[in-house]
Image (cartoon, rainbow, N blue to C red; front, side, top):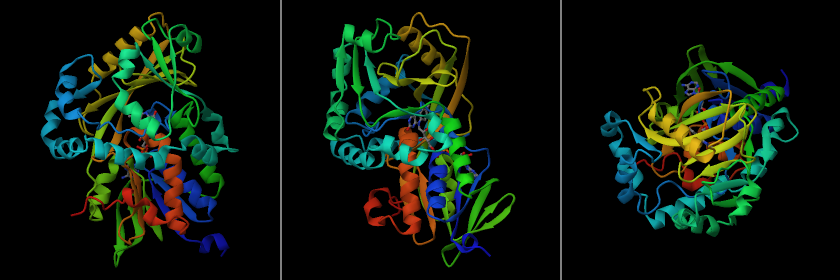
Length: 419
Ligand SMILES: Cc1cc2nc3c(=O)[nH]c(=O)nc-3n(C[C@H](O)[C@H](O)[C@H](O)COP(=O)(O)OP(=O)(O)OC[C@H]3O[C@@H](n4cnc5c(N)ncnc54)[C@H](O)[C@@H]3O)c2cc1C
């Protein structure tokens, strides 16, 4: 028996960005780790996002006044918020709790906690992927916000005030300076707010996670393709992870199954109020023009990002649950908005995708141990899971190895909704 065989064994469930990061940091700490996913790594929500390491995105969607504005947003066919109405009754309890956070005190509280998870995201991804095969996908870059004019920028003054208070000061460009910075943008964009440091993007989020899974395997980690059905606890302590291929004995487990975490957490007696904020992307392959860095288009609430296979435009929020397939209207809106933004854009063809952002009612991820079970959570990162995934994996690995103080993560406790 080698010393590796005697080292503690952790099963990480879910090979998205959160799971692979946890696996790598545990393997680097000398743990035996098995990473289980029902699909290949990086095929869940981590595949299709906008690829932005958005350190400044500390302000949640639930800002003051949202309750008043939401009906108008839903009725406006030009606004990137959609609802499958048949899903509304089922999501009402979540929606009520979610909207209850749309006040100044809660928004500030959430922003300060999110800053802890994502504020140093570029550096965290560099620590995770630097000097490995995954580094080829990681690009330190600006992250910019594009507005039609100053008025549109000032309409978001509350969000910018909070970003500034959290240390993120944009450089503002107007008129000719916009065209000089980003020639691909059409005349419809009159102002850019540019974040210069601590930001970046991933040239293919799905391939990045696959490369990280290779790094994990190179460290001696084991990859298993299986569906997890539950966890066996003895005296409220994890004994094994149950899969459709049989049980995997372990000393600890990490639940990193994104939006699909709710039923597995419920089996362990934990209520994690999450809803899918469905999002979409369209990749314009072989585009005649492309933004040079990720660019959030304020009027469409989507990001255009230069990627290895074209320009990916990703965003939109649609409430419609996990079961139903994609809708047409969000894609049509994205296409319309891109046409407005870049009227001269030509391309070979497009690829469309829909995925599920795991959105807790309080917009804070679940990072911590469930009681003293040895089961740790690493999910619930809503719009910023790629950004926060590298650090979350490191934090969870630290909790398991004993290097991370659990008290410092109290705001993210998985049992914070227990009554
Ligand atoms: C349109 C869109 C744009 C986005 N843009 C950005 C962005 O630019 N920047 C950013 O930071 N974030 C962005 N996000 C959010 C980000 O993509 C997610 O927060 C993040 O990918 C979640 O990662 P995860 O590892 O928690 O989950 P996932 O990537 O979904 O991984 C979960 C894994 O668990 C597996 N799994 C589930 N159940 C089981 C089971 N029972 N057994 C075995 N395996 C199971 C799944 O197969 C999956 O691989 C965006 C999201 C969307 C939808």
